[in-house]
Image 1 (spheres, rainbow over the protein chains, first blue to last red):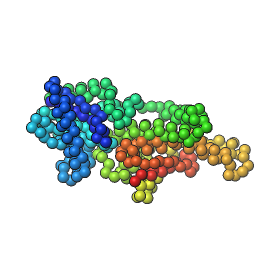
Image 2: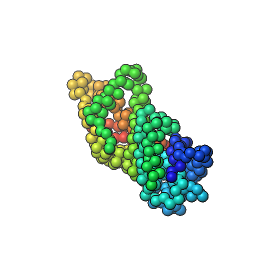
Image 3: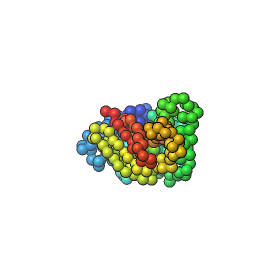
Image 4: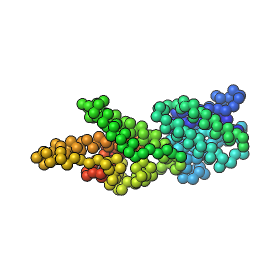
Length: 140
Length: 173
């Protein structure tokens, strides 16, 4: 199950962060997202060490913890997408397609002329789309 | 898929935008009008770059980003590629379009040139100045795309003979 997704801007400013659990662990999940930013930075600055192919947007598994797996995605415009899931056997292709849909939703949200670049995404349509995407992956 | 806009609508909008800003809002301050139009272009470029760079790997250097503008971005927006790209490898790029779409229907009234006897007419430079107002919008678009890709720069345009047009990009170190 996907428990948390986040969009982080190019100056590491949070643009959107949403957890999908009933338990009161939002703070813990935000902490995990926060930690993963360092891992992304490390990946991008030392591309040879990581297994990902040249400059691909999808960064793969950032780090596993006991209960969670954290995946990252970095766009051309230096916007980071982070996904925290509790499933321990996830297929890379599923995560890839999740990020692709998530990215498309993000692009639609920032193309709104009333959205101010660099500010948090407040669009309700975006929130709805994201929770639909997350819901569709929770069933698998 | 993406929705399209009729080309004549875009042309009309550009004409109207220039007319509004340089004729009504800032009639006495062409500098300010140019800056405002450039700022609109910046926002448009900023948002377009987000969409058009979606399915591609990240750019590793400036040249790759500029090439993206010349090929893919230009094809998306103007249905053709940039005809000539020059660079001094020190952060200056010149993009030349031999038939820039937004200027392809602009012509300079020949009668106004004949009226004035002086060969270095103010009429001609006035016409060039009027045309240059239409280029602040595309300049802003280019700047918006590049700064969203993490390349701060200044963009200016240069018209030698219509409808040829070159854009000069100076990357800020």
